[in-house]
Amino acid sequence: MLIIAVLMLCTCQQAVVVHENAQWRGENRDGVYNETGLLKVWPAAGPQLLWSYQGLGDGYTSVSVANGKVYVTGKPGDDELVLFVFDLTGKKITEKVVGKEWNTRYPGTRCSVLVHEGKLYIGNSLGQLFCLDEKTLNEIWRKDGLNDFDGRNIMFGMTENPLIVGDKIFMTPGGVRNNMVALNKDTGALIWSSAGTGTVSTYCSPLFIDGYSVPLVVTYMATDTPGGRGVPNDNKLVAFNANTGEVVWTITQTSGNTINPNAPIYSNGHIFTSTGYGGGSWLVRLTNGGRAAEQVWHNPADKQHHGPLKVGDYIYTTAQTNLGF
Image 1 (tube, helix red, strand yellow):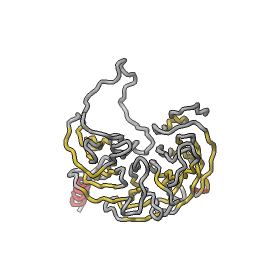
Image 2 (cartoon, rainbow, N blue to C red):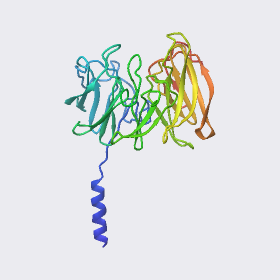
Image 3 (cartoon, rainbow, N blue to C red):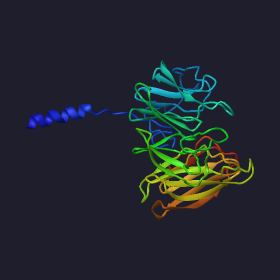
Image 4 (tube, rainbow, N blue to C red):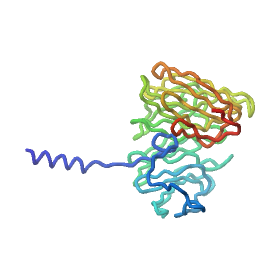
C-alpha cells in the first residue's frame, strides 16, 4: 500500500503544469521588478544591445516576458492589431492578427499582453478583450465592451490593461448600466456587472487591493461631458467590491481634463494617485476596513504620464512643478 501511495503521489506531481505569468507593470502592477544579477555600474556607452526588431508598426505597449517568450503587440498595417512572439534571443517565432486597432488620433496599440495560466489576454482601443491559447494562439473567447455592454469609447481609445483576480478578469466598458464588469477568465462569461458611477473610462488600468473587510478594485472614471482642457472636471477615484461589483466608495479628484492614465499605487493602507492638466497628486487613506476613504493630502504638481514608482518611503515621478514632499 505504501508503494502504491508513493507512486500515485509522484504521478500527480508530474501532472502539475507550472505557468509563468506576466502582466503590465509587473507582479503587483506597481512598476517594481525584484530582479537579481543586474549591473551595479553601467558602461559609459550604456548597456550592450543584444538584439532589436523593426516592423512592429505603431503602438504604445510594453512587452510581457513569460515562459521563455517575449510578447508584444503592434499595428504594422492600416488597422490590424497584431501579436508578435519572440524567443529570448530575439528570433521571431510567429505573429498573429488578433483583431482591429485604433487608427485615428495617435494610432497604435494601447494594452500590454497579460500572460496568465496558459492564456494570453489582449485588449484593444475599440473596447474589445481577446483571450488566446498561449501555445496555439487560437482564440478562446472575445468580448466587445462597446457592443456587449453598452460601453462608450473615449477620445484616444480605450487604454485599460486587463486585471485578473482569482477566476475574474475585469474590464471597464464605461457604460451607464455596465460601468465595470467581471468576466470568467476562462470562458468570458459575465460574473457581475456594475452600474458604478455611470461615467466613462479614463485611460486608467485598475488595481486590486486585498486584506480588508471587502476586496477592492480601484480605478479612475471621468465625466462623459468634459468641459475641455483647463476647465475643471470632477474625475472620480472609484473602489468597486471585487466580489460583487458594488461601489464601495468614491473620491472626487478634480483636474483640467478627463485624461487620467496613471494607475493608483497602494501601500500600507494608503493609495497614491496623480494626474495632469492641473490635477496634481493625492494621497488617500483607507478607513473602516476599506469601506471608506479620506484624503490625506493633495499636491498641485502636474503629473500626466510615466507611471509613478514607490520604492521604500519615497515616490519617484516626473512633474512640471516641484512636488514639495
